[in-house]
Structures are given as structure tokens and as C-alpha cells.
Image: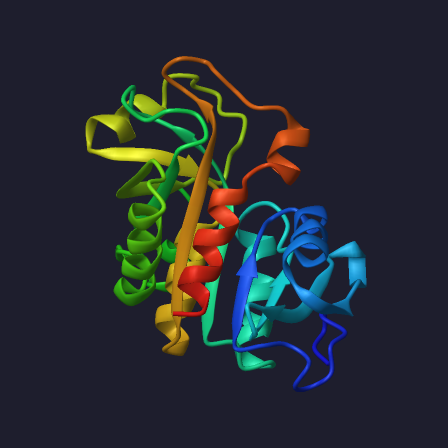
Length: 234
């Protein structure tokens, strides 16, 4: 048992999906896993372990933003032995050719956060995913004919920014999506020598202004979930 997770040793699988929303974790457990067992409800951050197509796998919410995500990822790796961590979440698209509900696989994760500046004493670090997990997710998407894009993303500390056009600078430098957690996930995976990937569904579009509802974000992103399982269990 760790500070923020009430699971006993052995209750969490080495492969785990990490949605931000704990209700999405609950939905995935109830609709995709055989014999799901609740291992955590501390702070209502639900976590479950079950089987997907016979393979043991877990799913757990991590909250919004890098500080919350960092707490859970640190404990999942350090205290529970997770080795393959796949973030499944939403993002905003920064390129016109990318459509709402398309998938984005984060090839790298820039950030406006000070977390890595502090960690690396002012130096820059380039957070990147496991190529093996990325390839597994990409191959699955191609096989299933899903709209998928592989490219640079940015993890922002601010959902509401003072400059509404701030995203345009990231887009100018080839960034295709914005979210709030992947840079910390990729950095912690490198620190601990484990594998990680961010698979994102485009929920809103900074170019066109199109957006999905909160209910759709919680329950309807089937392609992302199944690609997440393909990567986590590769």
C-alpha cells in the first residue's frame, strides 16, 4: 500500500491503462475487462485489475495535470511494479488536417511546465515514449483502419491560458496536439527504465473550434481504449 493507492502488493498488473478521469477507468473496467476487481478508491481515483482477452491488465484514473499524474505514476512504478503504462486521454488538435475523434500517438512531449526545468537544474530534457509501444498502437490503428497521426505533442500546465493564440507558436514548430500529462509520464518512464506511451483522442479543435461533449469524452472513445490495450499488452 502506498500513500495514495490502497492496493496490496500483487493487485496491480505490470500493464496498465491510465485515463485521467476515474469514471472512464470505471467504464473501461466494466465494459472491457473480465472479472474486474477494484483495487483503489482513495480520493475516488478508481483502479481495477482484470483480464482483457485473457491477459492480465489494470486501469486507473490519474486526475488532471502533471502534478496529479506524477503522484500516481511514481507510486504505480515504484511501489507496485508497473512496467508498461499507457495514458489514454483527450487532446486539442493544432493542425487543420487532423479531425475531431482522430487518434494521436505522442512521438515526443514538449511542455510549458517548470517540472523538468527544476528536475534537470535548468537544462532541457526531451521526453519521448517507448518506440515498441508506439509501434504496437500504430500497427493496431492501421490494421483497424483508424484515423491515426504520429507526431509531437505539448503538455501544458494551463487549460485556460492568458493568451488564446499561444498554441499557434507550438503549431508553427510542428506540434500537432495539446494535453496535460504526457511529458511527465514519459520522463518518469525514462527515470525508472519502464515503457510508456500517450494515446490521445482529439476531443476539441483549436483551429476549427469543434468540440465533443463531456459525456462523449467519458464513454465514447472506443478506438483509443482498444489501441491502448494493444500497446499495453504488446
